[in-house]
Image (cartoon, rainbow over all chains, first blue to last red; front, side, top):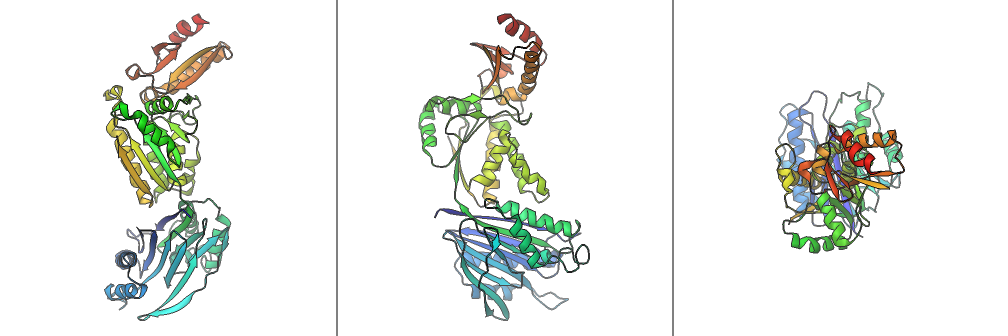
Length: 390
Length: 80
């Protein structure tokens, strides 16, 4: 089974705090992804230090092969003791899942994570084990394609206490909400954002505690191949286009001249329909067998903007839906953010002489930077990205 | 049927392809030429410095919002 472990996390900061006391650390090594959600005692700086240390130590040690006992003991003996409370305390949830779907979860005092399959919670058998002076819950289970694991900090179950709800948003309510929201193809990002915006509403926009969700979703791997710009050496056109056409995955061509090269080499017509879905983005073209054909630098720059908003902590739930618009930039952004799980960019560096005009805010360096910036966002999402220049 | 290709490549887009397209569409409507003239898009025509490039047959014209009326009179109406 060729799968991708998609992860996404986001936090709400306690109202008035500049730092978050929750911290998520994700390490991908080989075919295992290690996700650690830590919630430090208190809030602000102290909590931030505790959770940063915990998540960083745990994720690093586990992904390097240390066992759970060693890791938890190291964390316990490393954490600084709070002078006021005389405690060194940080709750955590650790999930390790490999590409066969084998999962190992260890939970310490965080609300219990939710495993979702086809819109229902999957009960998981948990064993209580003692590590040092800590009682932790350990479980081993298998995740299938489409399954999600939602781990969250106690800020979620405290959402709305004494404000909109008497007892907060209890775990049962959270499970019900997540089950109803679940869709087979729902990206991890959408689930995280949805759960957090529900918490934020319950808190009436002023969270009483740091609140974090981290969603892990097992999905089918889907590579994308993106051709941007004509190669410097035109004699390579044929070879590069032929390789591109043979590639197995989503295919995208960005750039007017590049599209013409693909059309010429493949012998397939390039048609451009004048139907502006957005007056700021040039219409897309059509080449048989290519999933998306767009103009180059303007579309890339716009797609990057959309991607930035999609990933931003500040953006509203509704802004995530911008990727469902039909203009070239939105379609490109959606394809990169949600449809593909890895990306290969073939970037031609031939400069269009007409773009060297000082009146035009576009040139080769802008295009190259856009590709780099887009690649950076994709890597942050845990996607493998290759950028090949030619 | 006359086909007018309007370049929507990067340079032409920034120089206002959209405006040229919508003005041409309005004029085609106004003169009721919908069944005689077809507007289509095209990627880079290689005349980026003269954006917006508009192609009729083998000829390429440099059109902008100031001369689009003139272009329509001379190149479109007179050829039909």
